[in-house]
Image 1 (cartoon, rainbow, N blue to C red):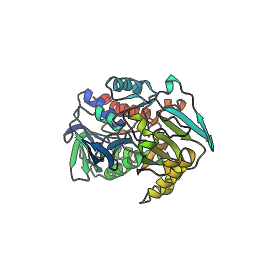
Image 2 (tube, rainbow, N blue to C red; image 1 turned 90 degrees about the horizontal axis):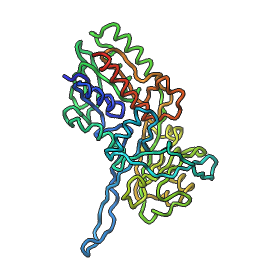
Image 3 (cartoon, rainbow, N blue to C red; image 1 turned 60 degrees about the horizontal axis):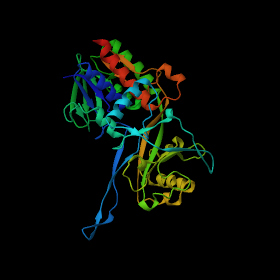
Image 4 (tube, helix red, strand yellow; image 1 turned 135 degrees about the vertical axis):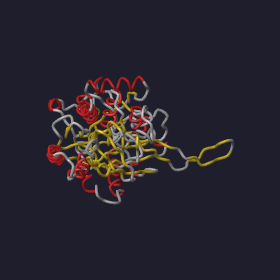
Length: 380
């Protein structure tokens, strides 16, 4: 039996796990995905075969490229996350991204945005998911780091919590931290709210927690990943071919577009990532085939920047149902009892109200620290 089981291997869950492990707790992390990091997501894409000459023979070679389709870049605002950033920089996980920022506030008008040292953005050369891999390097896959373990129910067994997974595996722990999007946390809490042996006070707390979680709402987003021939490497129109990102305030479909390949120093062929606006994503979020939505986004960006953007060599689409928090929970974590707590980037501590510059990663990291404090360090 584990001291603490943490459901969710995004930044919040990992931060919580790190804190508790450092304090001597035996911790297990579960996540529904094969990878780690939640929205610190990197997709490996195998490019179509290209022709190269090897020892006088022309052969087809497939190249693998890494594309960040979730968190666009790492830009810490709080002192807690800035301290972690220094560690990641020292270890070579992060590096500064020399990117030119632009805005569109009026249709057809592209404006370069002046940036200061405080605007410095960081990326992981190996992809943003490398951050999660580094932070969990002391965990052992298959033992206390369980990927492909979707938690489907939670039950209170007197002295411990039992987590049933879709795979049929069961994880038992004295305490449990739920670090997943609020709607998914609601489903887990509902699964245990009717337990016969649930103490009355915990049952009441569960009911209140479910009400609080139901008040949390999100904006969705679609991400389009598109790769192009190397002949377009310097054909960027008004955009800086060494690295650019554009925030579009005037359009109806695109929120943000960036030259993702500029994060990889050896990249030869352009790779662009497009993030949609929430209203656009909402039209397609439950659609089985997202390719029509991707085509709209590609054509829209081709009209703004360069015609070739509408005709990629390859493209993929990803839906983020819980991309950005709309209505948040007004604290750094949601404690249901001494042995059960929830958290994530949907938790906004009171002091954040006056700090609009905070990023989702700041909320996520602070929530992870708060969960560890409430469920472990505070209750020793």
